[in-house]
Image (cartoon, rainbow, N blue to C red; front, side):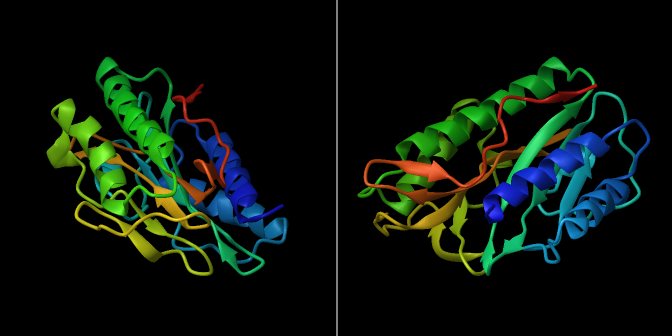
Length: 218
């Protein structure tokens, strides 16, 4: 297995730990405990598990907030394996989500998929950011996508290149970076979907394989 596969394992552990009343910190602890039991001793960065309104903070701090019915739960995590880092984000629903939550999720997924589909040698880092941002802005939520589209990854979790509007860096085969659009509406909802990938001759291949359709945890 590689770092991306282990990130998928970590997500699976986290999804299984979701139940009504469980706290963010408890889910986080279960993920890291189970990984350590399987020989993974180091995370790429501080694991994020954010539920409900807490997910509306792009880089929030997991705490004592408990999962409630109809919450969206955001996981952002990665591991270090054989010297390389992984980084993945998935947002899942506990019980049936509302129509509003579904709509926001669908917009973020569309933005992520369109940006992923556009990755190939010759496009610029800024153009990729503009593609995802254009999708979200087109639905009227542009102000709530308040960070860059992605960052390089390798032996550390944040590397060159930076995928941000205005960066004219030309993407080349072999580059590795994240695609992670999000919508964060304070007091209401937060959704982010992220995969890291490597650029191939004609497109890209993601390091993480956890499905991106909205998963509903019952």
